[in-house]
Image (cartoon, rainbow, N blue to C red; front, side):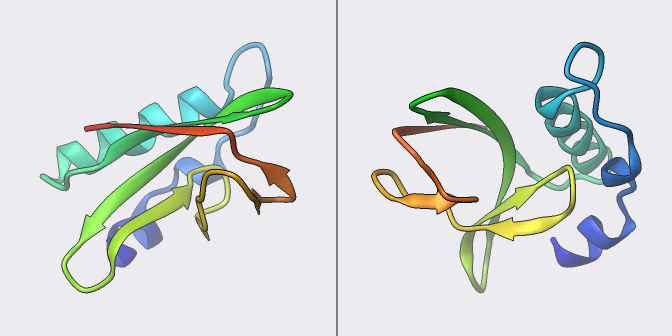
Length: 96
């Protein structure tokens, strides 16, 4: 997973709320992972004031790892507390 994220260049794309947003970043990482036969999940997180998309990998050594595809950061995801850049996560959906 770490090698794939280091090679993947999706994070170099330019964010635009109307034409290329978090869903596009997430979809591109998933498509790139699948092209290398790496299983990757679409993660939808809900906040009180909006939502966001991430990716997740189920690793052998560390379990489920969440990655922010816009900057390749590993993210802690936990319902009920402010774990995503200070925003409280209300719900998480993981789609394999």
